[in-house]
Amino acid sequence: MNKLFLSCLKATELIEKKLLFKLSVQERVQLKIHKMMCDACTLFEKQSNTLGKAISESSKKENVTIDVNNLKKDILKKIGEPE
Amino acid sequence: MPKDNRLEQWVEDYTRDLYSWAFHKVSDTELAKDLVQDTFLAAAEKIESFKGDSSPKTWLFAILNYKIIDHYRRKVNQPILLDTQSFSTFFDDEGSWKPEMRPKDWDYEDTELLDNPEFNEILSRCLGELPEMWNATIRLKYILGKNGEEISQELGITPTNLWQIIHRAKVQLRNCVENGWLNN
Image 1 (cartoon, chains in turn orange, blue):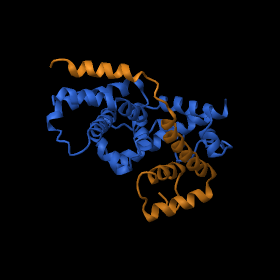
Image 2 (cartoon, rainbow over the protein chains, first blue to last red; image 1 turned 45 degrees about the horizontal axis):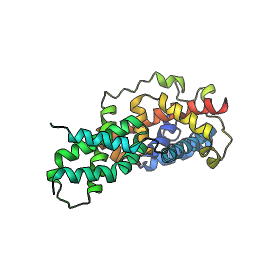
Image 3 (cartoon, chains in turn yellow, orange; image 1 turned 90 degrees about the vertical axis):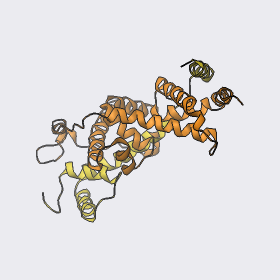
Image 4 (cartoon, each protein chain N blue to C red; image 1 turned 120 degrees about the vertical axis):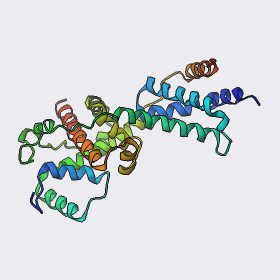
């Protein structure tokens, strides 16, 4: 593997790794150089961030739609049952 | 005071909050109900060890959170399989994007997309199409808000395995969302 130039496969791996762990200095430089030359991976990163935001937010938007009283009854029945 | 009364009162007071929390973490009505039910069952078993050092609510949430992580852990608890074959769909032998798989411009502002019901529907369908384990790691990261160290520890996988899984999941997810979004 070339020290400076990453493949798109490697670059996108680093883009995702960066969201979870700290990259080494070498990895950061490699990724930066790759993105300067590669529109596709630059787009990939932007869209990956958008997807992450959308996933985080979508879970907050969902509303509680069940009948909580029924659930309470079920639970009380369960914990009331003899072992 | 008899133990049972205490627990009954907690069921009355906290079921709604516990359920709402569980539902937002797993996005599945039945599963969320089960998790809350299991939480109270565990609480019933362990109630003698509850000394009241923390509030009952904190105690119950701690049990629930353990149940949620345990649910994800069991999903992921299968051999980590990263086949290179699925990759040849997206990248050629040199690791370059295949021409038809290169990310395309979605032509949007973040804020527009995030509030767009169609986009969110596509996203949710595409998440559902991911292999279970991939889906679980994505949810741990973005919905439970865990960092890389925490997720790999909780799931008992190496950091490298974790980012490799998330990478594969994202490549596939992005492609699925793009196809759905640009073709709708």
